[in-house]
Image 1 (cartoon, rainbow, N blue to C red):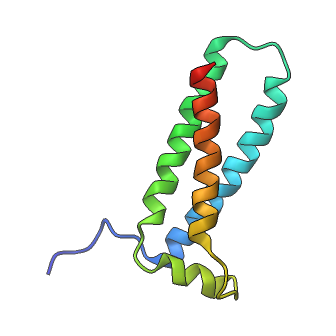
Image 2 (image 1 turned 30 degrees about the vertical axis):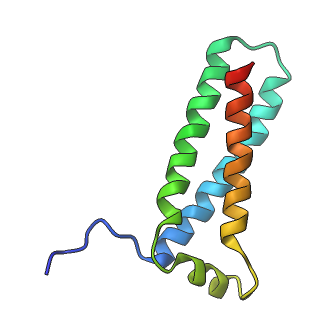
Image 3 (image 1 turned 90 degrees about the vertical axis):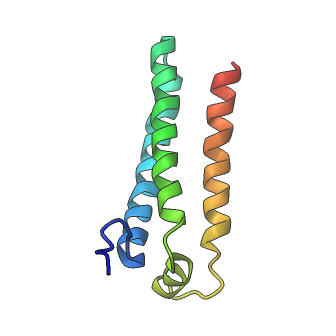
Length: 103
């Protein structure tokens, strides 16, 4: 049998996904304040780049086998729909990226 080095167990993946979500929240708050200032286009392009990278990290975590049930167990809430929350977060990120690219 091959050593399964590339798979991530749900506990590690969920921890990393939560940390990434917190990182995105903090980054969004920082960017919101930054956008109130007079900035040049390179800063805006960097914002899109960072958000795209963070979104890619989240994409990797969503495919971890067992992570959905693991998240419900960890949060002690079997009605917790992490998939819906994930979709909403990624949709907001996509909205920001699209808005910046359009404008």
